[in-house]
Length: 220
Ligand code: TZP
Ligand code: MG
Image (cartoon, rainbow, N blue to C red; front, top):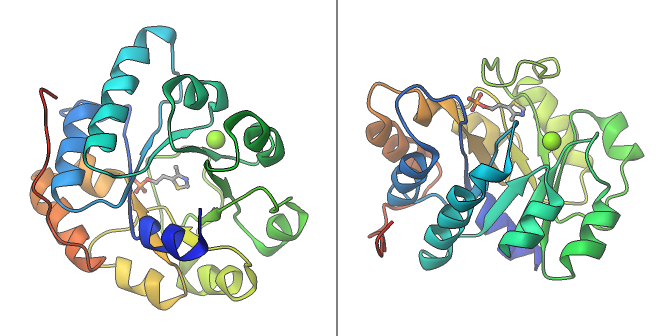
């Protein structure tokens, strides 16, 4: 995908929470999309084949609302679902293999937490990098040390690819990530574990300069 289109898509990057106490992934996505999310990642760390239909339903919902739909880690699941792409960690399939499997049009993102990882990664097959944690997070138990806006800026300055910041980002801290050079901000718990998820999603969207959308639900 063209660099500018990726940058626009990264703005309000919603990631599903497989441990949210009160909201199913589908409900989370309905809320995020209605608040203006520009891209959705289905993240399920213990994905099992029984979750396939849910993932397919989420994919349909994103497609109907013209929002790119990515899968975390699982390249073959992305292929089977006809998803728009994948987000890969440093320990997942290589971006090159993902590109081979998913094709030239796929969006491929890679987690990069510091300059050294950036230098050592093969970025040729990537469309964007995900950098963090920007702030302390309780959502990822094995998260790397917190980068803060200064750490984000150190990577944004030298990254040849668009960058989305991730980790502990809220409606109040999103602006500091954009100021540090991020093209977008990724969010989980600020929305999925909120007392009022829709209110937080709307506040987050506003901080990203995104507008609420009239959702197409078509039975979902
Ligand atoms: N990668 C780095 S931090 C993180 C991931 C998946 C978790 C982000 O979740 P939250 O709840 O927005 O801090
Ligand atoms: Mg991963």
